Every structure is written in structure tokens, then in C-alpha cells.
Image 1: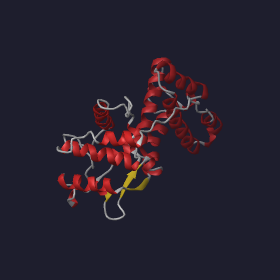
Image 2: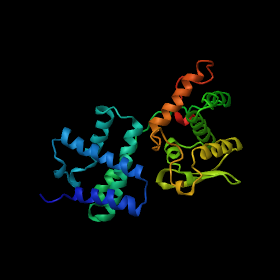
Image 3: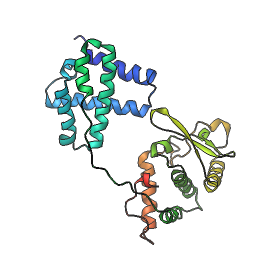
Image 4: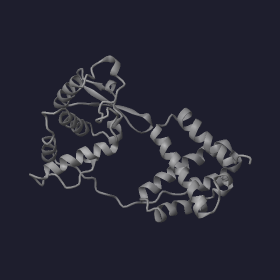
Length: 263
């Protein structure tokens, strides 16, 4: 069977355009890929259409709106997730309209699909007193406790996203005055965040006792698990949760559920 125009464009979009021309992060490419995996699943399960029969003509505004509704009602996805999937579709169709100008009118109907408004949620923040209590929980007499204290201090001091934190390499930590840490966010955009003296002291000790001061370890992840692999988002969430439970045994200053972004 001859490859469809959808197959051709999607392959080029994911494997060439995004990584080489747009230079987007691997996480973004993974998210976009997952969107189209779900779209193919939607065609197979809801439209009885095999992946090899999906064409650009089938990807109408009405079809894609149905897909988004299926995500929200059939798969119980949040409005935020729905909008993320739509953003991937918009990006794909902007790419395709440049490749096939003759279909621009059809493609722009899809690009015009609006995001869905979600209820605004209140962003929670720990008070300085609650954060101080949380930082008192790790056992400073053991290696893992000192790692956790350093991790939470960096998270609090820099306001880093969890993904940014776990992506930090040893070479991203600059402790010479003025001390900074280099964070890499969405789209591989970097920013240099200054560090407070206490965090600098914790990092100096942490890196020294873990022998991370060796030049050949510059590309090692800053924070690792018991298997010396880079921490995961779930791993960081577990660490925070553990100390939240500990802190609440003596005080209600710390809420029972603390999102890692609160730190």
C-alpha cells in the first residue's frame, strides 16, 4: 500500500522538523508523538479506520473536534490535557500548510479550533514557616537525608520546575561568586538563577561527598536515586511526600497534600 500524505507529513514533522528545524526539547517531541498515537487510536476504535488509511482529507475540523471531545469525555482527560493535545495538532497543521499551500483553507479551519477555557485554579504556596519545617525533616546524619535536604533547598531557592530540577547536570552548578544554577526549560531555553548562601553551602558539601567535583563527572545528573540514575518526577514527588508526612506529625503548618511546585 502506498504511504498516505498524513504518514509522510507526520514522519517529517516528528523526526525532522521538530528536532532539527525548531530545535524543540525531547519532552515536547514525546508529548506531540503521544498526541498522534491517541489520534490514531481514536480513528481505529471510534471510526474503524486503520492507521494506514488515515489521510489529511480525513483530518477535518469536525473530525478533530470529535477527537478532542473523546479525549475529555471518553478518556477523562482534563481540559488542560485537551488543550495540550490541540496545541500539538495546531503545530502540525501550521507545518503542513507550509508544505502544501494548496490545502491552506482546509488546514486553517483546523488551526482555528479554539482552546477550551478551564476554571482557574489557585496556586498554592508554602509559607516560609512551613518550608522551614519541611527542611528540618531530612536526617542530616545520613547521605540520603543530606541529598534530600539539598534537593528541596534547590527546588525552593530556584523555583525550578521538577523536570528542570531533575535535568540539572553537575556542570550546570556554578558555585563561584556569584553562585548560580543553569536551568533548562521548555524549548531548551536556559536561564541562570542565583543561589542563596545556605543553598550554596549545601551544594558544596553534597557535591564534595558524592565526588561530583571531578571534571569527568561534569555531565552527570546532579541528583540521582539509589541506582545512581537520574531522579524521576515520581521520585521527587515521593521525597516531598515523605517529609510532608513527617512534618505533619508535629505541626499543621504544612498542608496534607503538597504539590512539588509549591516548594
